[in-house]
Length: 146
Image (tube, rainbow, N blue to C red; front, side, top):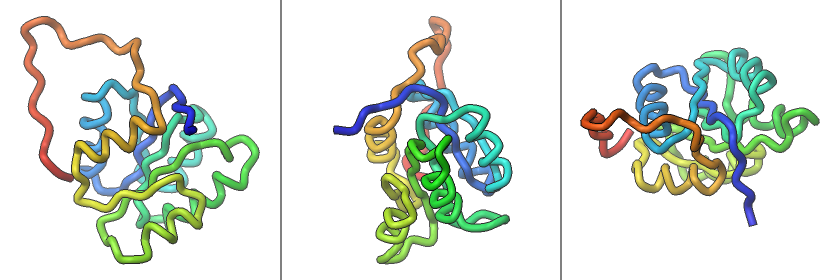
């Protein structure tokens, strides 16, 4: 059985729109988020915050998200980090490559929001200390897919 961890969810993606949409979905579901646009930035944030889950794009400007996953899984301070690989350039072997690199699961873009949320909830617990929206404040609806 997988034990869900509490803590922030780190989104690592170099596309600002993808990053913002993932961040909004996660925050809407009650998760605290951190965002990195490169491997270097992600490594720094991982060591500072030890996130409950890392959602990493496979293609980043300074290398492969799968290489990041391998390094994190081999390092004593971070080997327990849960990693979800995410990619727009999905091919038949991407999921297998992600799992071999140490990722705990894989999701192809465009993501289906309901499936993505269920997958995230399998690994991470929402931040229940987050304040609910004020009464009468309506939140914008989430997009159907990323």
